[in-house]
Amino acid sequence: MLELKSLVLDGKDQASLSYAVRHNVGALKTTLEQTMDVRLHLQSGKVEASMSMTELHADSLEAAKDRMALWCERMAAALRGAVRKEGDLPMYERRSFELTEQPMWLQEAYAALVKAKVAAQTDEAVEALNKWLEGHPMVLVYGLMDAAEAEACRILENDDESGT
Image (tube, rainbow, N blue to C red; front, side, top):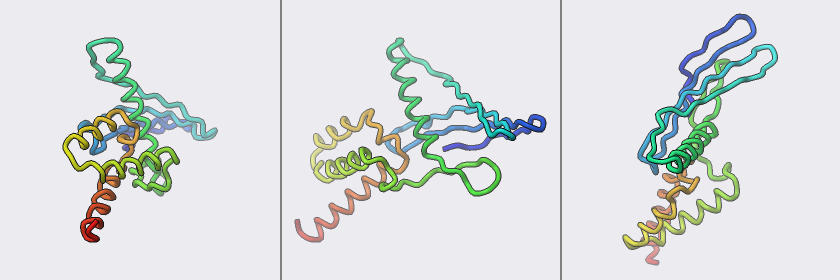
């Protein structure tokens, strides 16, 4: 999600914008928020942007590298998951999850997830599924996990009603 925090006109040809880039999905228990600063050159349409990762703490260089990679993936998901609102101001809202708009690999992973959720009838199977999901990029897509859970529940309910 992108939330416009400030918009300042710098003379005739430039505007400075500051956005809060926020990523939170139900599958992850944290909300990650970073600031993205944008300078827009009004006449040419050119843009300069920067985002700095802050408050990253880790016990080793490898752990810091892994954490930074995850943060970058989450920020990318937040940026891709925002769609511009109607109007003149550069404001955004969260894009709703539409399976058909996702890349084919993600649609296939989604189908495999739904199938696995339907098949996971034991605690061990649920634990194995959760282990499979750790670090999987589909957990970063807003709405995907909720949609997969709802679809699996519908399948299980239909199976119960039909007696299979």
